[in-house]
Structure formats: structure tokens, C-alpha cells
Image (cartoon, rainbow, N blue to C red; front, top):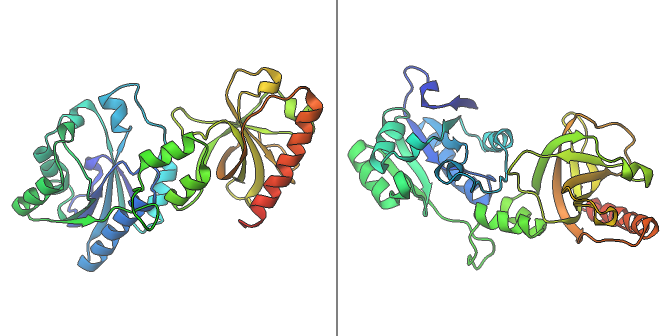
Length: 314
């Protein structure tokens, strides 16, 4: 998959393409349906498939400080999109100038002048242009003017009733509530949190449960405080079971919220490594214990439950 930063990265003589557009945070089941439709249509037409997305998140530019929690960081999002068979990922730097483009200008400058769209695939609720003034009906009218077709991909429901639609907003709410099982259902895979392992208080090692303190990037969607069963993923290594604690460590009057992973059956050093945690199940809420002994006893139970939960997920 080619990766372009901005439209000027398109090579000279770029031909026709099938384009889909969106933030695609999470690359969830709904996004997968839309992108998959675009890839299939491009193959039928014998042209390239192009996914257009934006960085940073448009909300942060239009309403500074309102950045939604990120479900997939940029590199992870690119990897997931590539796995869907896309030919080109075009990341448009989102600025105030871009946000002020009218729907008509956006279509002309992006879809027509640069990407030479033969077809555009979008979801039924797609909005675009300044103040999200453009909708699918306007896109269809502009397509008739500029010579491209518009194909709508149906929205994907959480269940057979289809009452709850898969969306990044819905998944963020699941993660925020600690319901990583529901988030995984909507994503089509476990919710992942990535970061670099940094030194902490070393208290876990003193208790017999050395933990990897995972420092995450700003705005990452971190599950609610609690203890979780997760897979720890490292490049070049088999994934490993981990019991993950998220919170302030109330037994020791902690104040800083942390993501700490005890990796089962592991005896090594992860400091400085970038790791990922794929959350499978929430085991319990965060609690304060009256002393070390009951805390250690609970940690043994957490490890046993983590082992039991993840054995069926191999």
C-alpha cells in the first residue's frame, strides 16, 4: 500500500481511482464494510482504491481541546487499512483552511482535480465540507456534474436488530465504561492500547508481581479503572497473557493514573520497548485493600482468572 501525506504526494500521471473518505478512527466493522466495498469496486473497474483520511482529528482543529479519545493511533490505523487490501492511504493534514472548504470546493480539489475519482464510496451518514454542510445527496449531485458515481455502503448494526449502529462514538463509550467485550464486538477485534514501557515505583516487583508501566500517548482511549485480562503484543515475539491494572493504585494512595501489565510466565526486561495491550475482558473494578496481604491474595486470583479467560482465546 502506498502512503501519501497530502494530495501533492500523488504521482504525476495519476489515473482514475475509487475513493472513500473518513476519519476511520478504530477501523471498526462499519469502516471495514465501507473500505471493503471501495476495494471491491476498484477491482471491478480496474483502477486503484484510495482511502482519504485526516490528521489531526478534525474536532481538535475546529474545537481545540475537544479531541475525542483515539481508538487507533496513526500507524495502527494504517496497518489495519492496508490489511483490507487498499492501494493508497492518503492522509490530508487537517487545518483551519481545510475545515473552511465548502463542500463543492472539497469535492473539486480532492476528488476530481487530484484523485480523479471514478466512484466514491461512503456511508449513508457521510457529511463533508465546511460545518459538515454536505451530505450524500449533494455528493451525488456533484458526482453527476464531475463525472463520478456515488455508492453508499449500508451502516453496520451491533446485533441482528440493527438498533445500535457501529460507530467510533459507540466504541469510545464502551471503552470508557470498561466494557471491552462490547468494544471488541463492534471493532471486530480487541481494543488495543499501545505505549512505551517506562520505570514506575517498582512496588509490583516487591509484591512478587513485577509490572510493565505502559506510558501511552495523549488522547488514547484507555478503558475505565479496573483489572483486565489482555494479550501483550511485542514485535518479533509471541503474544503473552497479561493481567492489566488501570487506575491510581488506591491501596497505596496513588494519584497518577497508570496502565500496568503483569505479564504471565515472563521473566525479562521490557523497559524502553513499545508494546501493545489487546483487552479481552474486564475482571473487576479497582479497589482499595486494607494492607498488602489481601491485595496480594487478590492479585493471585486476578492472575488465575486471566489465565482462565485467555486460554479459550488462543
